[in-house]
Length: 256
Image (tube, rainbow, N blue to C red; front, side, top):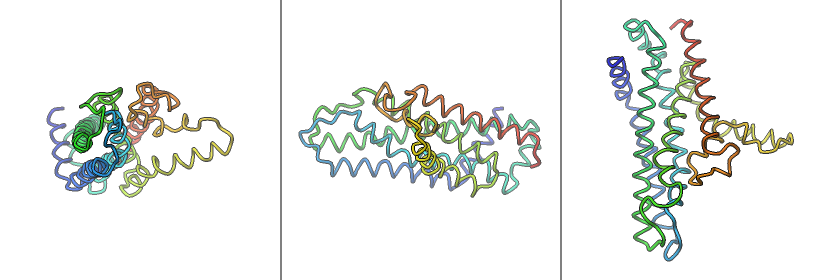
């Protein structure tokens, strides 16, 4: 298994596009935090660190989507170029191969989330504190560390596995990437609107991605969301695991 993990990590880090996507997400969060720190009118105002964490959670939605694209391309590109065949010849157990790739993606997503969150937070903190924001202390405030070190990494892990499941199931990079991006920002919005028009109360409780956004809210209770922090994460997690499980089951009997 160790050799397989090493092989999958090597494949992932040799794809230049992965670095580009991660860099875009990183720069976007840092840039937004820098602009807010420079132009926000905070002198003499109360600015708890949880406010910075909330901004990080909001701006990190873009890199989260890019992480899901990395998950898609990690597997769909292998099917497209036939590079999955030598791996399956060397390791005939397909579930083992798919598991190894998933583990590598989870590690990359988790580490990326922590780096983006901490660096983005420190940039925002440095600018805001230098401009006289009051009641701003490093990593203080309800839910701040929860968002930065727990919530955002878990969301990134779920998103990369969501993309991975789509890529493994569909195998077509354009189709899977389109679905990975459109599902969170368009499809769930349309579904929510349709349910609301149909008279359904609290349509968000039927939307897995929207429910999971509670993870990047500094509110410890997650009261603005239907299921709270644990429930929202579990809802999206069950959907993601079901998708990945279905994709693995289908590919066990599917020609490469």
